[in-house]
Length: 590
Image (cartoon, rainbow, N blue to C red):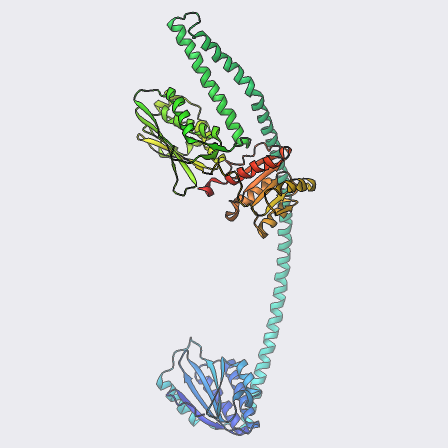
């Protein structure tokens, strides 16, 4: 192979004997020094050239050696060996590995019966670039340089070895010093680690104490909720009975067959009856709201004919119109399919919305209409009015219990501030949602969305695998045998952690979850399922031996059906499954 002759070639020589090897080594070291390579790089290049030259002499190969400057891709020293014969891998058993280890590149070449090896050592980028005149001067200086004397070169190699040994000794001592510093640092780290561990232990003890305090507070809150529930259960009959008596007596006094009353007496009796009616409505709203909050308000899903519902509302709501300047318009919903929902809850929601609109509309109209949503899976009910409207900063606040927007008309209209919060809770329990859009002074639009289901189709969809989570093995067997009516695949988990692992490994079609389990309880499992985006739509039936006070399965966004263990049967399971498929988190269903 004929070496390339580039303008950057600096020196070309022949290596055939041991003396030539010394000369090549000397020229290479001088070349490296001249272009700015440091002492260590000079020694690395010289060692590589020596090993390659000795391999060639042992093989009886004469080689042409060319020293040059390469500028692409970066400025580097290039030393190229070229010879007639076999490739470098065979000719250079020692030199090729040495060069590959010590230099930046060692590239074997072989073509047209000629072997070769190109060595490269990068020049530091911090040095100024070499000009053509620099390269020409370097070429002249190396050409005129005295040929190396083997003894001189041997002395130079010995000196280099001594320098290297001294450098190694210095580095050894420096390493020992660094090791001592590292040991001192390690002792400091260990002391700091112990200090942090002690602080962490102290913090953990505080956390444990706080956790115990939270458990105590939780127990107290549970006791308060139980007391509240007992209070509502007891006071329900106690409040309604006297109120109904007062209203009944007032109606008797003003009945046509009763003793005639003066105008003032009639006005006062009417005031008594109106006050009793208002008080009864307040008691009913409070009781229903309490039921919804505790999760005990369970929908009874049946096919509902919207024509009948709208007809009922058309008749009952006309008597609540306060002004002849207000028109109540209820559009015909005959074109819509029946809904699979709770008729009583639906009527209460719509009656609340219509009642609010009629209260706060002095002129114009209040309109109720229903239409199938674009997705075909929901019916959208809208109640629009031309009333006083709601300021932007109050639209969400009206869904807070007892909150009322201050206005002169509010004082005259009255109310408890429970109607809209109650209506939204019912909407969520039915698997839908309720939102308001309003502009102060122009009117309000309330939109209720409820899912549609064909009432003629009472069958259930393919549920896939059903997962039962309960620490009671006998109950798992009992509910598992009943669930065989709905799915061929039923799997089991004995605690909350095992349940989450099972869901992560293979997502089931539905989960039947016990609330009270050791370790991770059902409430925590349900919370984890609803926090993960990919599991928010997983249907869940909460199965428990006691109704969980204070747990709102719907409005808290947990989206689960409730089934008492004492009522376990195929029919109650069917009902709970249907409810769980409908009552999912509102944000996901919309």
